Length: 148
Image 1 (cartoon, rainbow, N blue to C red):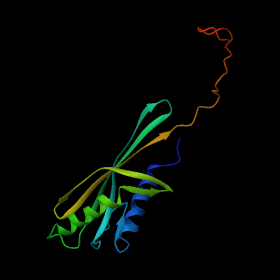
Image 2 (image 1 turned 30 degrees about the horizontal axis):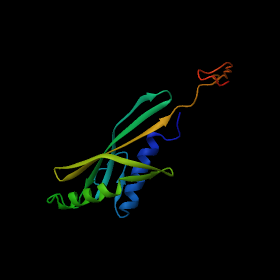
Image 3 (image 1 turned 60 degrees about the horizontal axis):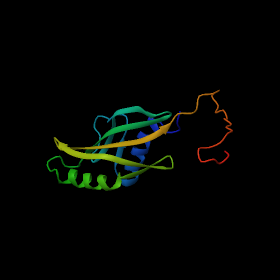
Image 4 (image 1 turned 90 degrees about the horizontal axis):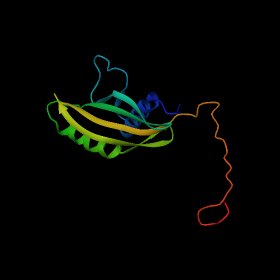
């Protein structure tokens, strides 16, 4: 159907975080016991697809990016990181194409930042094989008398 996949979107978000915060670990599958903070964990919450028109579909990917600050006693580091994510995740390069982050919001729960961002875009299904457009010829006069 399309070249972009759910895994390429997820990998692109992880790569974007790794590039933005090169000194921090970014986990995409699971957080290992005894991890070192500060670090990120990227969780894909939901992924969906709705048909819009003919072969056009709208895909949506909702992420919860967890940030574990060095100190859980203060929310200042978490909110500061959220400010950076609002700016840096507006546009993300994924497989050479730019994708816009939307629906961004955050909350801090038990000292952990939860940054929510959606990546929504259109994809096109390939034409079914064997269906071709036919031509139509029309002869005659138009209403205004000109020959068509």
